[in-house]
Every structure is written in C-alpha cells, then in structure tokens.
Length: 63
Image (cartoon, rainbow, N blue to C red; front, side, top):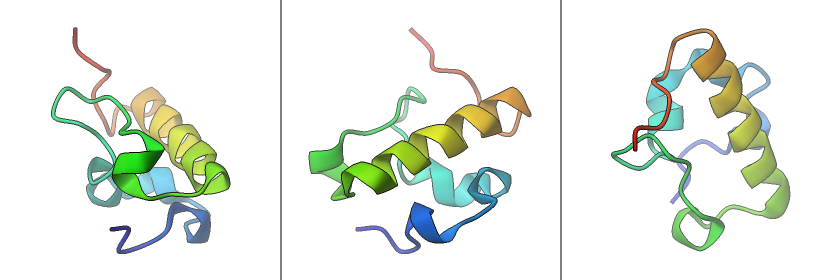
C-alpha cells in the first residue's frame, strides 16, 4: 500500500497528506498488518506523526 515509504522521507512530518494514509479516521496510527510496513518503517511513521502533531500539522487522536 505505501505509495511513498516513510523511511525515504527524511522530513516526512512536513507532508501531512502522506502521513494521513497511515492514520485512521480518528487520527490513530494504523497497525503494521493494515499498512504493510516493516517494523522500521512503522517506527519512522510513528515518529513522523508525533512530530507533525507537535507542529500542529496533524490533529491529536480523538477519543
């Protein structure tokens, strides 16, 4: 599924459109079986999502 792999994005958090593909409609990061990412890519995606949330490019997960 990944059109652009998060591992290839050195500043991936600056592109919220790419990160939204890996987030659910509630803003939570999708699991590895759903996104078909490796462990390393999943960690990089999580780190990029955290950075994007801190810079207000993505919303925090809603309950």
